[in-house]
Image 1 (cartoon, rainbow, N blue to C red):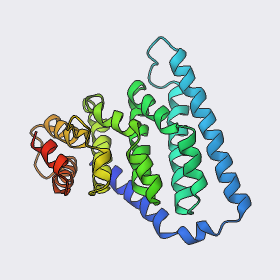
Image 2 (tube, helix red, strand yellow):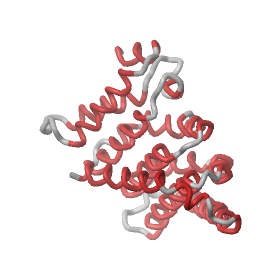
Image 3 (cartoon, one colour):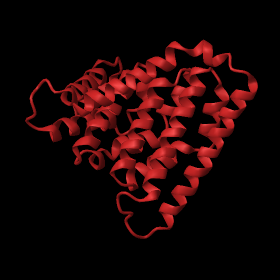
Length: 239
């Protein structure tokens, strides 16, 4: 049920952004400049929060102000980038890429508390679903940050709700697979982290009823991985 609720919300938001580009694209330059300024401010805030995390030698307890702020800023960054894409405002994603925000977000996903991990996964799924321009999509999918999240799959599998969100991300990424983008997911050592993460999640789910949305998300991811017309991907899937 949790997986279904999150996946439905993601699809609804993505649909809203996709079906109303003209209204957003017609915003005047001052409004779009404000969007870029807001993204810059959110990036600055996220950098500051990450520095706090780096300076802290102790594990931050759940429910702290830092945790709340971090989750909110991660969500805001992803929403601003998605809005920029819907408006065909390429400068917004360019700013996001130049600031290397995705690397910071991924690091927080590995090191932060459960709620921050979930925010990171949701943000990545929102970006993967709503990036429109081919160049921007390639930059996103080829990012070491996405690869790091996939390779660190065990960190997202123990908590049931986090695993649901992680599976939703896997499915969203797998939909973007084709003969070109698969090269961003299959490494020189023939590892296929997207495929392997789905297998790991499926094993963690265990004996849940076959028709659960979470299991269906894993199977859909695997089907997309197996269906790509690429020899290296097929070899990686075969183990």
